[in-house]
Length: 272
Figure: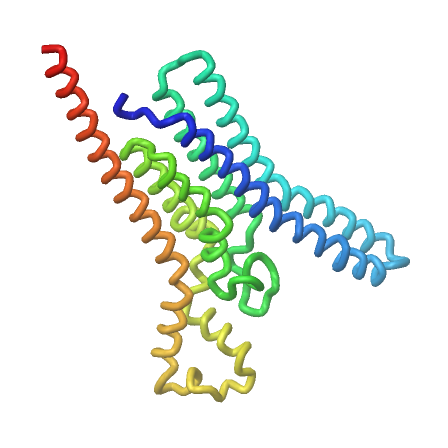
């Protein structure tokens, strides 16, 4: 009874997760495919006309592009669809309501695995400052970190809406942060984007003559430190949102226990 969550909230949570995957993740990746195939691919095929090796390379690259852009959104869609199907089956067979929460936790953990694989295998963590690939054209030097906040993180906001028990919520939140901000970036050397040399390289793109104040020895260190601080704001936002989820879950858990205790006392007094 203490861990039960209303059916409507659970169903609504799954529907919102599916809508997020379809609209945001599929929407972004399909637009990338359209941009690549209708613009870049046709242009490069015209340039490679008469060269069978280049044409074969471009055709193979298109197949790889389809795989990279559609595999992980399909996996996310599959996980949430299976979770919704399992929830419907659990309610129809009148199983223990706690099983619904266990299933939801499993779906979140699978989503974290998909996010980590997507970040490590598909996204470019160490793009140089002058490269236009991955998330850098959209979010700048802190591209992949900001992408987590906008492309992956919103699905975890469902933990505000479908309150799991405190320990489950904390475990999911901590695992999500560890995988996406610690383990995968450390393995892929993703935090190099905040290094002194990379920030200096990025600044040089905006001042080719290197005559601005950020290239003056007197102000250079302070300027680069401020740029590092600004570039780290997406990561700090993710950490604060994770902290808010945990605090909200703890508050909800305490309130639920108090209400449960009050309900039991009223029931005992009524029986007497």
